[in-house]
Length: 102
Image (cartoon, rainbow, N blue to C red; front, side):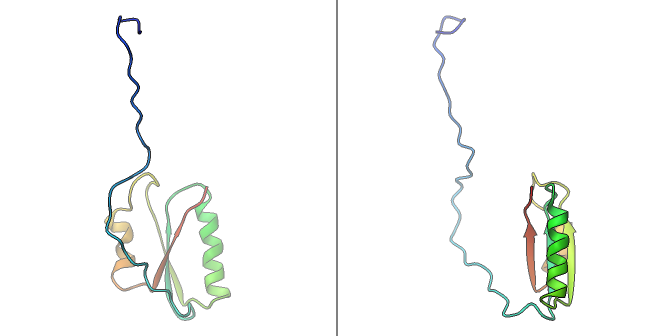
């Protein structure tokens, strides 16, 4: 019983997103990175910039990427707005790497 004379019920809420989604196939892998333009998406988590700085260096020096285009989400708590992902969608990049770090 609670202080109001009634019983309290417990409500449990799942933090998981259980929204049904259709099955999808992953994007095809690049056969090589050399000569390609790679997009890097920083989701604004702490440490993400450091991680992606290193990835950019490796893509260029070790794997011969022609160029890297970087974009940063304004916040990691929401999906990337259209203006952030637009440079990745118009055929300007061959692949995108999203940096998740903490």
